[in-house]
Image 1 (cartoon, rainbow, N blue to C red):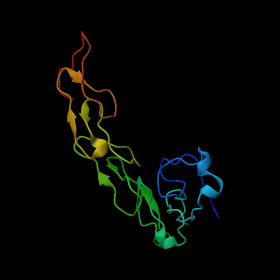
Image 2 (cartoon, one colour; image 1 turned 90 degrees about the horizontal axis):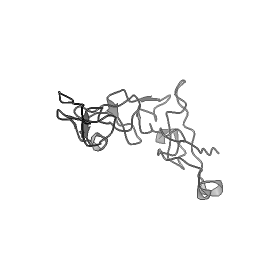
Image 3 (tube, rainbow, N blue to C red; image 1 turned 180 degrees about the horizontal axis):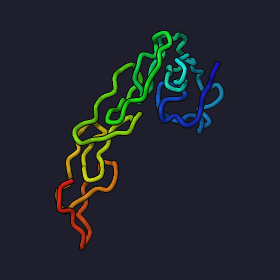
Image 4 (spheres, one colour; image 1 turned 135 degrees about the vertical axis):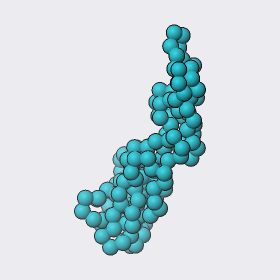
Length: 156
């Protein structure tokens, strides 16, 4: 029996989700279900998971952020490449980010880069900020007006 707890940003705990586990009293002891350790190919020991209670290798899957055929004999999962994402557990392929959106390798969603606004995390596209406005980070924030004495002469 294996019980895993802790930081779970990429599904490494084998529970079939990306929620952190073990911080609350109802998440430990008998309340904490065992997980099947899905054997996987060398070099990818944390990239193959199963939902709680699974007892067969054929039920192993790739967590969010990874793609591949985990249920195959010696199956493995690889991280989604930059510019793609996967938000669900399973063998689905990674999805390309929407127009003007970006993502790092192994992402669960996409975001709008600096100079763009939109809701890429929900599948929407990113639109360049108009001249005289800006955004400074990877998020869905609305474009802000440039401070007094500063000006962005071009869009984006």
